[in-house]
Image (cartoon, rainbow, N blue to C red; front, side):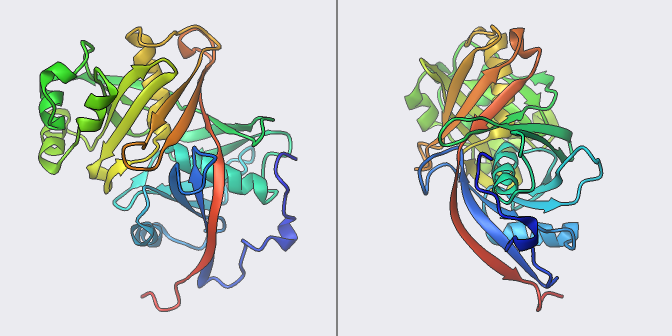
Length: 312
């Protein structure tokens, strides 16, 4: 075992009282407490309906809250229901890695170092490597390449001069969450950027879709990144695993990183907001033909119980 498992019959995170639900808070894509992206995990959520899950996610007010329920497919260890404060997500990276950590630690998955979870986007493979501390890796779902945008409209939406935008055409990519990728010329330009409601509305009108906007600049180790998602109730996300696979594809397509199979790099995100996160990327096969893996560490932070006795 890569994590010390808790036996299921003694698992303190499964409660028989349907009005009280245990949860854990973990920091994802970091080895340091209070860095990375915080996540609330409800390990036994079969009795919760979608509306209640959304209300709980709004109460938690983190980038995402994940609810672990029984899978429909027998080859999957669990189904993950993922919510931002504003909406349900079809796929998200830090909830996949964080929930995977809780599943492995509790003995519910990963005895052989690999397992599959269900999400709205479909089956998502997860593996646990033998590094110390262990790192969990997800395989990015199929990426759809969608609309391209102009450098000038993205500069205007981000409140930066056109000179801050690299000579790379921004593009909307989608592995479950539609995300606009904008390459900037420097870390300073990334840190200057921002997406307010007016800027988000302008891009939303152009794309006719709720969107996230991912800004980055290439670095010797990979990328320095930020992600804005006001449409999802998250002004800025400290770490966005669902966007990191598409980031790798965008960088490969534009010769910003090698597309050779076996290439590895790191996207540093959340630093500007004081939540430095390190998202590791592994390109499998030429141009990711055999998959793009996104990996990171997880740090346990807190545990508690939420009571629904007085909820009507």
